[in-house]
View 1: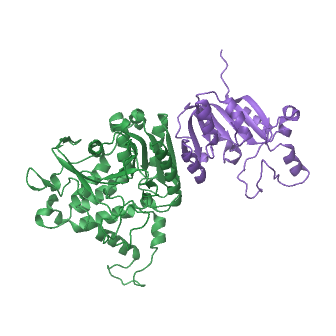
View 2: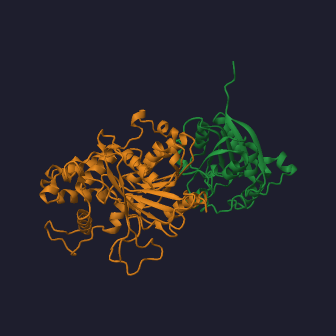
View 3: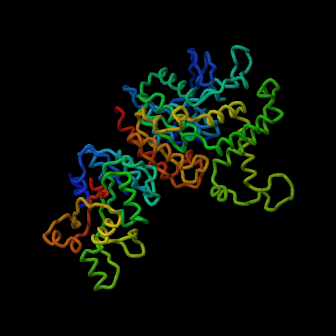
Length: 205
Length: 382
């Protein structure tokens, strides 16, 4: 299979076959379609964009048009095995609340976001003195939808605060090349960060 | 009249009637021993008989979805914008059926029909009919038409409620349920609007307790008020501001009770055209069917448990400025469906046209609805 985004491949590897999945900000439904075709996954996408809704529907993907910032109150607790938020966290109004909501309705969460700690961004801001514009962050500061950018370290600190246990972490480049630098310094070389996580489990007495 | 029938219209159409002798036991406890259903069809039923689509109508709708009756016909069917060759409900691909509901006044048995027991019109003695009575009668029509399973059952507003009831009562008889600008039950405010409309009709001196036919009159002023009230709840504040604003018909105010504001003129025009075509007893029955609709009532208001037996795939649509059947009400339907892990998609169309938006060919509405119908068509035999 060939997927249009490098984070999709990792997500497909992480998702167990025949799971129930909720994909927040599912775009044109590519990931859900792939998961349902090859891994027997079922579930729903949530999307706000009109064009994407039409494309999902045409592709036979279950999609619900809704603003994620309004929360997931229509979904009951523990309705899904996985709740995915790919390249959308940084565009949400309340990332911390959304993470909480993800783990309310699902057993595990998967989040991917553009790493603001990437070396290109650091150079553009640190040396150039300007807001980064690059292939993971293609828009200018004034028209970008990315209003809550963070680094791997920032995200992990928030997880700690929210009692979220990180199960797996991956940092990838845009074209999914995994050099040795990526492994050693993910916060510096990773362009896209991927996390799989769940609520911290109570330790058995 | 159309100078020439537009290319993308189904053209000239003719209604048909089926007579049913099998008694129909109604929810209200009464039985209709025999009745007629008038219907129209467009397009061809394919040899596998799997491309049939049923369109359920709303409060004042009819079986006449599309096309013209003759070249003098001023207006096409009520869903001409969406039903026709190459349109969203594409009559080149689907065999489309529209049926007039029982209790109606357009050919199916209703208050204006002759009651065989008295040889007089039923009038107010026509039994109360419910959404599930309608669906039962439509199911009998389905059998008469030789259709085993609808590719889709589609409806807006009260029509959407029928779609929901279809999916509950006959889960194997439809593959797709398309519910537009509907609700799983009316709110108190909605029932209240209906009650005001009913009171307007019932307190009109010409109503004669519903026996106005015998007095050769109609409760015209009551029906007018009912229609005006209904109509303004189908529009949004924004669209009324855009269409009429405070524009005056004659440019200045006259300090009298004639038609001064354009919006008054519009409402009166709506009332005029309605009074000539719609029966007051039918209006009363239809509003009652709306009020009574509550498929979850028998399950402690738990819509999710009622929908547990449903197997159709759902597409639910709402319109942002619709305050009579707001998006929130569609969310309730969607939630009950995904609570049951059913296939459901939901689109919330940005529009300032209020409830009536479901009748219009709005671009995003056409886009998502058309995409869904493509999918429905792709599952039908060629």
